[in-house]
Length: 382
Image (cartoon, rainbow, N blue to C red; front, side, top):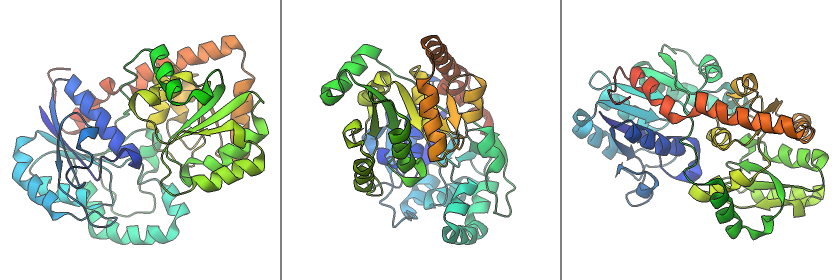
């Protein structure tokens, strides 16, 4: 089969959708299929982020990403593809995909958490603007798709609360990660070569965007309250909102500045090295439709300490693969204390459960077949 992913941007600093596309490209290819990507990026920016042909149809204008070249390209090339996967909503690429593909080529849309009611509560004025656009275009964009894909049962059930005309077909496609591709010790050595100050230190790892949604502030408070003196905190990720300086000042006030290490964004081998070297992974997020970094941690046999707002938390609890608590300072403090209280045999069992949870639920090799069925396609290579 020949498949097309459509996405706003392949910029890895933008988080979930771009990383999801990168990993799905590998999964499609492993299944014996050909895949291409169309984006609203300016040519020459991020084509090397994925291992396939990329058609950069931008630059898209403004936050919405208006780039009529994308619609022209889709109409001229849609016949080459058996199915189209649209990543993300609220921007021009979703409208262009519907205008080019509805009734002509099967297409599905991944919402990537963008229909979570958290955003309605957190940003009520933005919700009013979204409600207007929903009525004008977005509801039709989704209703015309073969399916709207969600990455967990929780996300599927709560999606689009507060929006009318939500007649779309809901399908759970529990994507995850391809897992590490290099040896544990080699990965750790590469990471420590870049960050020698962490040699011989035990640390919890936060891996994600430095963003208020991720709960970075409450993580610092909880770490100050609950972490044992010998434990460090590594915060790895891009600073998209210029929040890091405030968080560093907060760490100074809390008296933990010397115990918090800021690495910036980690990609490829450095990401795996940071995970393999961590005591545990921690994510006290206020909203997470899936959390690819959680799946990355599971694939390495690293115990995830996560908030109950990470939508795959129920599955992780059911598998005995991690610890879950509310997205509050108290909840995050409990995560750290409860982890530190585990005996060695309990830690080893939970690490084994973490890896088994990944193999059972979050290996992308298990997800592409569900995605193809949502498109109405079958794949003989599977």
